Length: 595
Ligand SMILES: Nc1ncnc2c1ncn2[C@@H]1O[C@H](COP(=O)(O)OP(=O)(O)OP(=O)(O)O)[C@@H](O)[C@H]1O
Ligand SMILES: [Mg+2]
Image (cartoon, rainbow, N blue to C red):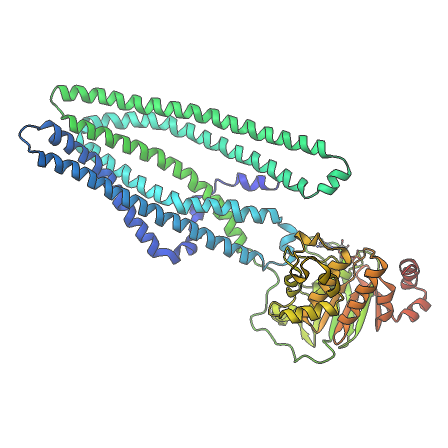
């Protein structure tokens, strides 16, 4: 539904298209070549009626005195012009289509490359569906523009001007008549054509609505079936498809009318002028060939006018698309690497030290409520710190700030004594390993999924990491071992198995600072034991922050931090905190009793 407003903006100013120039500049040579082919093709199109006249008047008309060689020559010339037209047209089509495809490919890559560098803030406000639609639909409009519309516009302008000049050269009187006729004929066709275009856009929108609906429902099949909503969903989709059908029928009816009208009017006008011309020929004021030539030029001029109006509509649509794409390209992520990044001190055997100074932060979308306030915490190299607290306390938020997905509004974060805002983003994030609450598994095999942690790792290194993460055994038991495809979003793995893949990934990366967001979902005893062992292995030789939901994790930590409402309210060891009888003691009594 969010697409609606952007569709309405499709009538943008054509001047917006100037923004696309940087994408066209690299292909100047190809544009010149296409232009030459275009000129040749337009020239030969304009030459054909003249050649035709020569053939009629001199080939047929003057038979008798002329020798057959002369006749042969005129026919040969006509065929020659047609050959030039054929070759030049094919060359123009090839060059221009190539340009359309090339520029679109460049534009798609540029937009995607830009979008993947955006901070989470961007994805909170922009729907992925919208980005996808810009990458596909909008770029397709640009492709039509570069690949056909520009050359259509040039070609038809040339034909229009050339044809008009030739018309007047042939017969000033008939030309004046036909100009009036053409205006009378072309105008209603253009206006009606606009209506057809609007209807066809409407029809496309209805189809898009139907497929958006289908997309949403197909992704939620288990829920649909569990609530036995199959019939409702099927009829909802059916109704949507019927709306698309009605829209298509409106377009088809209008289009049929247009076809009839266009043929009737154009032929009517031509027949009328032909009739006038025929009288002129009978009275000897014109030759038959001149009349034929005249009719052909008139057809060319009429065709050019129709095509130009078509092109104008397309250019307008492309301008809308260009505006949205350029808008997307202009978005600057608020999180940027500094101009002169500082480098981290060399890595020590224990891991990295971390210092949070008076952090204050609210999400950009919620300026009223602080997610973290005045949070100060020092963590030594090699320390394991468990963070506990009720849901919504700000634990995951803290991790987001450490990874610099957002910048805090107050205070600073120092990694090994360096403010993370002074580090290159890649340097910072390369120093941090993350095992998130819910693991993302890519549709690839087990080997590639673990190698996501470090792209240049060898197979042996991947297997070593899997062994450490207690993932080796279950991977070996998969039908094709490490080469087994894990399914889209990892649907072919259990929750515990997905987690161990994530841990193996983090271990392979081997970062000095590890952030673990323990899954809240319950695992069976065996998976729990294996994941626990994997985590233990992961913590060796590095600094670890773990958002803990399990007693075993909490007990092993050097220190426990208790968070509530974005603040640290208690800290200490398990025993000391239980003794204190505060929030931790009650959380522990509730949450960890069964563990
Ligand atoms: N992207 C976001 N935009 C706006 N507010 C957010 C966003 N993410 C989280 N919040 C809010 O910030 C607060 C802290 O959320 P956070 O995810 O850090 O909680 P948490 O301690 O990790 O909770 P849980 O244990 O349930 O995972 C919550 O009130 C939440 O609603
Ligand atoms: Mg969380």
